[in-house]
Image (tube, rainbow, N blue to C red):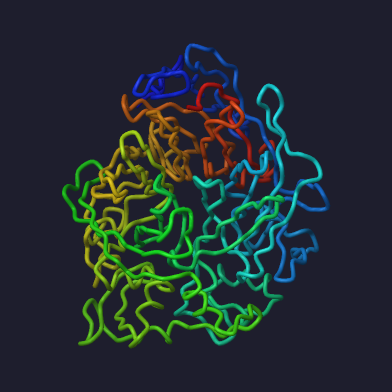
Length: 582
C-alpha cells in the first residue's frame, strides 16, 4: 500500500458538531521516508492536517527526555528499595534511557499517561528497566493548546510497598482517569537458584535489593500496576495480583469498565481476559485464557475464540501467597515447587502429568493438591496451557478498541514459532509444538500483523482475523519488510468515533521505525511519524479532548546516540488538533 505523498483521506465518525453516524474528513500530510544519513537520525512528523474543513498546522513537540532535572529529581533515575538513587559502575546516575548502561539493562522510558484530575493535567511516566520506575509531573497548556512541563512538579513514585517495579512496558489511561501499567518479561521461577539468581536479564534486579538476590522472589514481578491521583494530588500505587502473572505488554480496559484484555509478550505465550467483579475496581475478578480454534491459515489466519476460566480471586488472596508475614523485606512466599510437581517426558508425559509447551518449552507438570489458585494466578501461562488454552502466540503486543464497530485490535509482532506448524521461520522444527496443542498453524511472516477481533454485547471476543500483515522483502536486514507496509507492529491506539488505527513499530526490518495511520474503512496506510535510527515507537495514545485540544502522545525509546536526543528516551505529542472531541 503506497502512501500518497500529497494527502491521505481519513474518515472519522460522530465528532464534535456532527450528528451520530455523520462522517468527517480529516487529512494528514504523509511523511516521506528519510534518505540521507542526517535525516535518518532525526524525528520527522506530519506538519499539516485538515479537520472538519479547517486546515491546521501541527507538529511534534518534545515534553521531556530522560536525564532532565526538576524539583530535585532526575527524570528516569532508578532507585533501590529504600528509594535511594542508584548509580552505574562508573559512579554515574543509573538513568533508564535504554542506551547509557554498557551492560545492557533496560530499554528506557515507555508509556506515558496524561491524566486530568482536580483541575490539573498530570503526566505519569513508567520506565522499562529491570528496576522499574514511575515518575509524575504536572503539565501546563497555553492558549494555543501547546503543552509543557510545569517547573517544580517532578516527583518519584515509590513502589517499595509492592516489592518494587519491573520492566514497565505499555500502558493506558483508564476510563476512570488512572494510569494502568504493566510488568513485562517476568523470570521463570522454576530456574531460581539458592542465591536467588535466575538469569542475566532478571539478575539486574539485584540493584534494587542492595545486591542480595536472595531477598527477591520471582513471583514479585509480572503483574499489572495501577496509579491513581487523589483529591490533593497524591499518587496511589498498587499491583493487581488477581489479574494474573505473565509477560504483561498491555492491559486494555473495555467500555464496561470491568472487562480487560491482556497481551503476553514472548514466544509460546497466551492471550488473556479479566472480568472485574465491580466496575472501575480491578482488585477482584475472574481470569480467562483464550483458545484459538483455527478457521483459515490464509493471509495471516483467522479463528474462532473461546475462553477458558482459570480462576477467581481477590488480589489480597494472591498477594498473601507472596508475602504471608506482610513484610516486604522477608522473602517467605511460595516457590515453583510449592505449586507443581514435575515429571519426565519427551513429547508425551508419564501418567498423571500434563504435557504443555510454553515459553519455558516442553514440560510435564502436575498441580499439587490445593494449589490450583496459586497455579492460576502465579503461573498463569503454564496453568492456561494445562487447562487447554492456546499458548502459541508470538510476541503479543498492543491492544485497542473501536467502539463504533465493536472491534478489538491486537498486534502480533511476528507470526512465527509456536504460531507455525512444527516449524521455525518456515523450516521444519518441532520444538515449539512438541507436547503442546498446536492450535495455531500459520505460514511464517517475520513482519507480523494486526488482528481484528469481533466483540459481542458482553465485551467477549468471539473471533480473530488478520486485518493487516507486513510484507517481507529480500532487500536485507535493515529493510526486510516492504517500506510501504508495517514491520513488527507494537503498540496501537484508535481515535474514537473514527476509522483511524494508529500503529507504532518496533522493528529491525525498517531502518527507521514508523508510526502509521491506518484507515480501517478504505485500508489506506499513511506514514505520520518517522523515528530516529535505533528508536522504537512506544505506546502511542490518542487524547481527543484536553480542554478543547487533541494530541497523539508518543515515546521515542532508546534512539541512537547520534540522534538529536543523543540517546535519551523522550516523550512528546503530535498536535495540537481541534475538533477531535465529541
